[in-house]
Image (cartoon, rainbow, N blue to C red; front, side, top):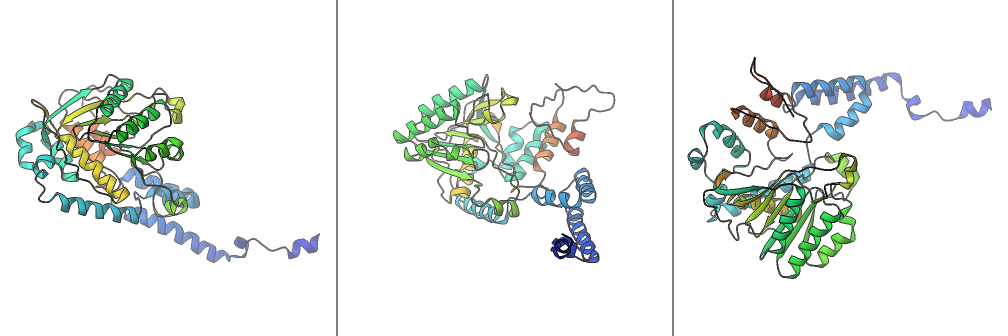
Length: 378
């Protein structure tokens, strides 16, 4: 037994000289730590948290940072997004509907009250899209009411239906929505349906997804998992397309937090029922939303279509509105900065409704009441 043990091969780490191991360990910690220190898009709290993790748990910390520390969707996605943006900008140049849809900075001051001009100005700076007048919004009573109204609008569609959901479940809502699209496609309505590759991973492998394609619904998967290892090595798996867009005949859009799923939300049943806020919106801003969908559709499929045919008609006595698209391909920290500007513009009341309240220091400081003022939250 002793002879066998004496000649047994040692593990690779035992063969590594101590000085070489120490050198590699130091290079790893200094390399990742240096990257964290050199980034200009990290706030001090996040920077210190990552550095502490790397020092206390160097190997686990480095792996976690490589997986979740960088805000990137990968070079391929970024290049494709840039090509799409260039194509859409070139197509928009000279388009007769450009000014009507994208708005104009000179018109903003005439539409928006002075107290809110900084917020609308910052929103416009993110995507280059300005507020447009003539919009109407109807607050849905609850998720069920929003679903029934949306399905009725789909059944009344005459020309086009475009939908994009982060999560589409194979439950009652998901099934009814799929059948509404199939009915529309069979009567000659152009139907496009896009889902996120992670949030709707079960649905895209279901018979219902295949039936939609067979019925004539054009389908697309945003950020698919063709090669999971490549995704893990080149981007962050948790950076997804979280949009929830429903567009009907280019004149109606639904805005809010509702995915294509029941309130029971089967994938997270312990948090059910899911309560969503939804608006049914009409007016010129619908064409801005159509433009956003067309950009996402082209980036995913390589196919383009004219998002302004027909052009959404303005609503009499409507309010000004603007669509702002945010994400890992847009300006870093745009979301907390826009929220901070909005919060700073509040004069008498501030109400925040969200299931995920994870503010950074910028938002927390904007929410802080002035000395001596009372502050409460539901």
